[in-house]
Length: 226
Image 1 (cartoon, helix red, strand yellow):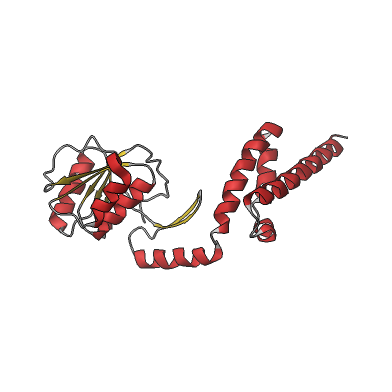
Image 2 (tube, rainbow, N blue to C red; image 1 turned 120 degrees about the vertical axis):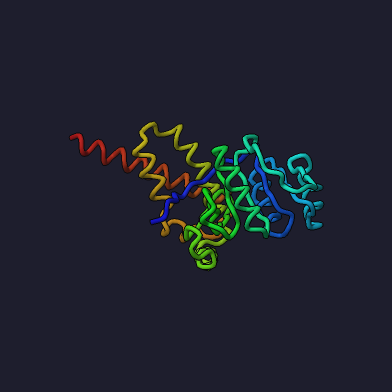
């Protein structure tokens, strides 16, 4: 039985360490930087793309052109071991565990306390698929299948529904009622019915539907009281 639970981490302004200078380490650094983390990358050599990445993100990315020397990692909240040396990756994992820090070791799930799933990004919507390290290729295949089911417009829908949620919070103080309205608006039937609408038009449509639902729920509640 796997010991993992699905969890999304807020890494905004978090200090994260990436050990490695190749393409795999680059992908991890990009993932962290795009999420707003502050990244330190350590390696004797870096692929040229790291220089481009530093130009893009500035002080958010620090490149240390040196070998990993081990020791105290308590300054970091998350560590990625992305070298091609098993012994070094194991040492990094042990150092992180001693400091109580989550660590991901690329392609070695038995050394990981955190695993990155195959992620589908659609605006604020993220769908992550993981096999607990058993078969990452399957996770990628399933992610790609989900990508066909949930096109880019799904991100537009998620953003608009998020805006409507704030409006609904002001209009309706009852949590259960808000949840019922939002669940109906988020249904696949409703998404398919509005597919392709621009954000402003979509917001107007969803707001009108939410107002109608609120009126219906008030009437239903009143009838029930009688």
